Amino acid sequence: MNRSETGDHKVVFAEKMSWLQDHLQFMGSLVEEAIGRSIEALKKQDMDLARAVIAGDDRIDQLEQEIEEKCLEVIATQQPMAKDLRRVATLFKMINDLERMADYATSISKITLRIADQPFIKPLVDIPRMAVLSQKMVKQSLDAYVREDVEMAVEVGTDDDEVDKLFGQIFRELLTIMMENPKTITQATHLLFVGRWLERISDHATNIAEEVIFLVTGEKRNLN
Image 1 (tube, rainbow, N blue to C red):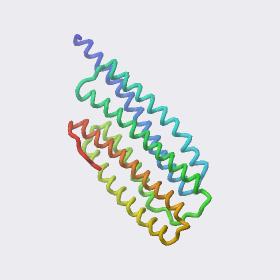
Image 2: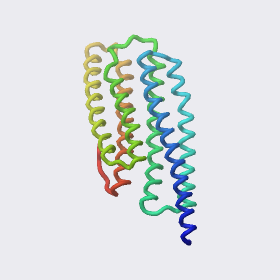
Image 3: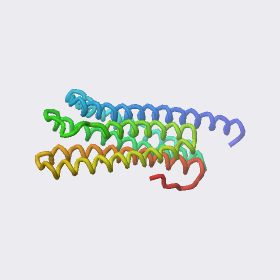
Image 4: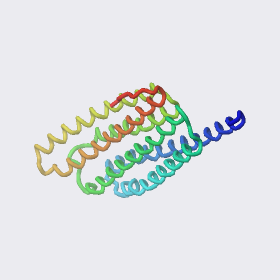
C-alpha cells in the first residue's frame, strides 16, 4: 500500500469510526431517556408512559444491530490493528451493555403496569436517586470512551459505589416493611426488583468504563 492509499485508508477508517461514535452516543441517549422515563412512569404510576418505554425498546435493539453490523464491516474491510482494533472491539462490547440497560428499563416499566393501581407502601425516594446516578453513569462512561478519558471512567466506578449503597438501604427498608406487614410482600418484592435492575444498569455502565480504561492503557482494572 503506497502513501496515498494509506492516507485514503485512514480517512475512510476515521469516517466509519465517526459514524460509529455518533450512533453509539445516540443509542446511549435513548437508554438514558428510557431509564429516566421508566422511573418517572413508576413514580407517577403512569401506565401510558410505561408502555411507551416498553415500545421504545425496539428502536434500541435495532440500533444495536445496526452498530454491530457496522463494527463487523469495519473489521472486515479496514482490518484495523493495535489500538484501532481495540477501539472497535470496545465499542462492540459497549452496545451489548447498553442493550441490557434498556432491557432493565423495560422490566421496570412492566413492574409499573403491575402496581399502577396500588398505593405505594413507602415514598419513592432512593429509587429515583439511583436512577439519576445510573443515567449520569451511562452518559459519563460513553463520554469517557469518545474522549479516551481515564479519569472520567474512574469516576463512574465511584458513582457505582453510591448506587450500591442506595440499593442496600432500599433492601433493608423494604425487608423491614415486609416483616412488619406481610400484605406488603408482593409490592415490596416488585420494588426490590426495580432497585436491583437499577443496580445492574450501573454495573453495565461500570463495565463500559472499565473497557475505556483498557482501551487507553491496555490494562484491565476492576472498578466494581
